[in-house]
Picture 1 (cartoon, one colour):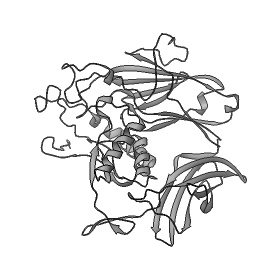
Picture 2: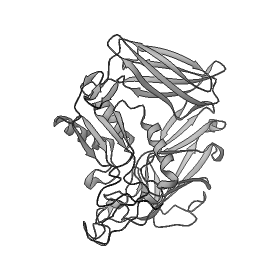
Picture 3: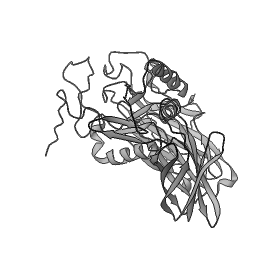
Picture 4: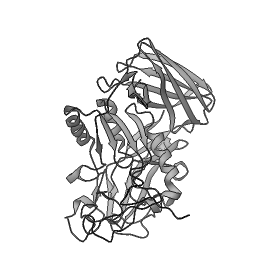
Length: 405
């Protein structure tokens, strides 16, 4: 079964470019240690020489390195590393081997590092480039500002984010779930739905490396903002009759419907969305936001009657969605603030011309599909997510969406 390890502790950090730091044997003994999530921008004093639109704080280029030990029984296993978010232009190496880049600062991405790791010491190296801070319309932060997770699993396992469960119908007497799955080399999969007390509420199995099954759940307890009840969907791959991998997904049984004349319906009942827009940072705390801070903010929203959030203007921290599931919030999950057309970035004061035009628009043509797919696959099992936004104010008077033909 898969073993998941949080890699947030004991990273080595160097602010400034360090050509050669991708090499496994690079001398990093003098680098200070940091704990992730980490935002280097927020540690500096405010200065007018930096962009006003992003909080008068600096960017730059920096390196992170992580030394970690893999046990002897890692040989023959599948090893993957997942970065929750790096702002921005991240390039990643493992043991001197280049894994790839990710320009967008809000995407969660995974690398399969199986061919490059070994029992004993291994070294992850990450270069982060955020030289132009006038690249957004709000404070972005800089660095590895979300969690990093290591997974060690059997070679026969689920694809990353390879299980998708959705409630097709639900009522007091029963619910019907559709579960789609993709594996790496399995000949089947099985699924158990457990209550918080670990009692089995339903079971179903399917055959094939990938497939689709339906699960019938008698007398379900439905998820809602008033009663955010969560089951656990236990998913296992099979090979030759043996279980090889296990993934556990918190799952809320609920139905949603939008009607052009009558509005939004949750579990068949009309509901008004009373929401707020939430950026990825926590004000003076910066972009590296502990889960406890999100919980405190959501509790205050709940107390004032809020039942919905919009993740302005990018994929959020996964911890935020976990809390929305647990505390009962409905979510519009947003992808981008701009497409090919760049927006005005104020760097000398609001509406002080001329603006700068840096930002995601330069990467959108090549990366929008991968970034959008990553967001949807990561977040699609959250009962809190009821809407997908593919862009914020893509065309409005100050920044008209005009693309050369």
